[in-house]
Image (cartoon, rainbow, N blue to C red):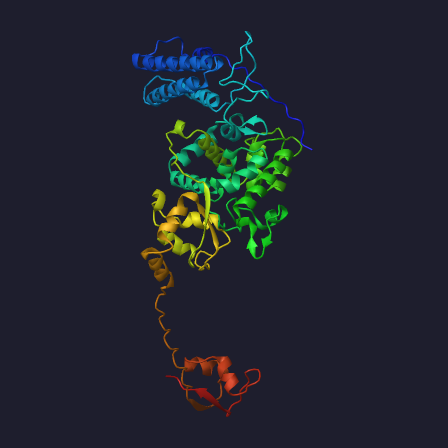
Length: 490
């Protein structure tokens, strides 16, 4: 039974008052800022006024105008904060604090108490549960068991460093993970939705674990899009189904992952960071480290210092990917538009996944081709094995007409079949070298002072063991006057 949760409410005063306090705390002896710094702070004031205006518009029931005003305030704040970093005397902390607060308002996580004049201090209208009245799809990505995901993701140094990695060196991996996920979403998201878990978390785990490659296998043996170890997968029903490892099934692995995450959230009192650390480093180890105090922070030296570097990096990386899933535009990130609607075709002629990839080409603007997507959607099919006519193949709905136009008749399926049937020439292995001819032998009469070792040493081409076996000598014993056989040295 899950313990009752205490819903923490936040008082959200007008942002201008908050930044007035920040300015007081960060002032340096009352010194007047330079003209460039004053201009940047003036833009900060404009952004905070925009924030307050957005609140008033939402309270008046005009959500669309409120969102538009908030977006404009965010743009003003972003531009000013970038310039602040290169302006002497400018305090970037003022901008960072404002930026974080606005993002939390934008995704509906800034849910608070009523103010002293009984006006609800929230960025959007509240429903009966006190949850922001967002569209259902947006609500689903911001809540974890009724808690705001934004409040669970602390913008600390580790998460910010991971954000930078996703936006720089890991950016291609993030985009690939996004594309792969959009085509897998109809299979993976329902399990998370039923488990009352946010979609952003599912994306963050998948982006870090496999990048959305359904057939990924790690060096340690973890497998599938969510990288289950064999024993853990077995515990959650990821067994062999007619020879197919269910860890590679997107829907089954998402279900198992949701069950695991909920199990660990219960064990760690909804501490998301500890739960992710358990997923990566093992729940047994995490429970031993944490002990009975589940309120302890993941970054507590008693916990953090005992973890592997992989787990220390893993947790903030997952949270950063989830945050970017929620706020791509706020980090100058643009995910491509993907029509991931599910579809299928019944093969009109025999074809393999590889052949279908050739005849589909770059349809739908997929410049890198459809091989990865077709593999992901058909994990039980060997991509090189030709499937008979009548086989149902899963693919994006947008490719159904392309299949009918390109892959049933005409030159492309013929070309694809010809390439698939091609084989590289087999080069015959060189014949083995002839066995060495047996060496000749000669006879030698043992003289006084000879030993078997001294005789072999003078030969320079044999061994004591070989000569002893040639002469059936026991214990390498020889006698003066004895005639023995020795190999001819060439």
